[in-house]
Length: 146
Image (cartoon, rainbow, N blue to C red; front, side):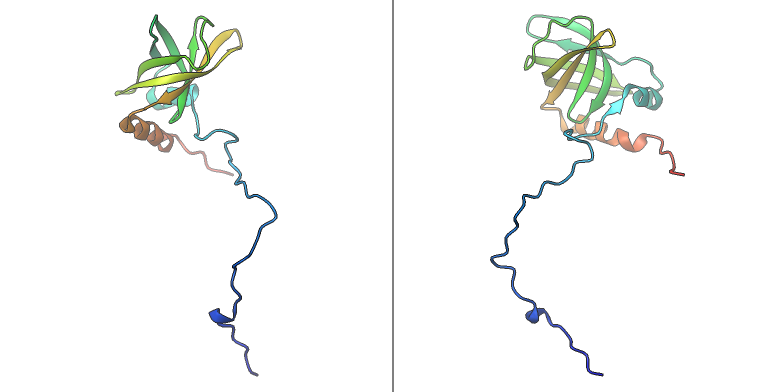
């Protein structure tokens, strides 16, 4: 029996090949760019119940509490709803022994379960802090799939 071997040169060129649809990769996080660490996960990682955050604007200083965090930003619990979307803030807090200080922009203000939550996007988060937050995911206890 004689085999018909195909050589690379026998395969036609892809020039002029068109696609009749636009490729959009699926993001398993939905619209989010980063995975969030929840307050429960932070509690387990740092054996700490509350994570106070100093939130400063041009006109006020407020104490807030961390609800969740990702490399892109944080969700904070605050006592009042007098915040504006796009308002610029500075924030600082500790995660374990790591001090995180960054500028931020308020992305949303919402009331949920009787409390006010701010979504703050980091603006210029130092690379050291970014890498630290990214490394926290690997510290989580992995539950085997059964």
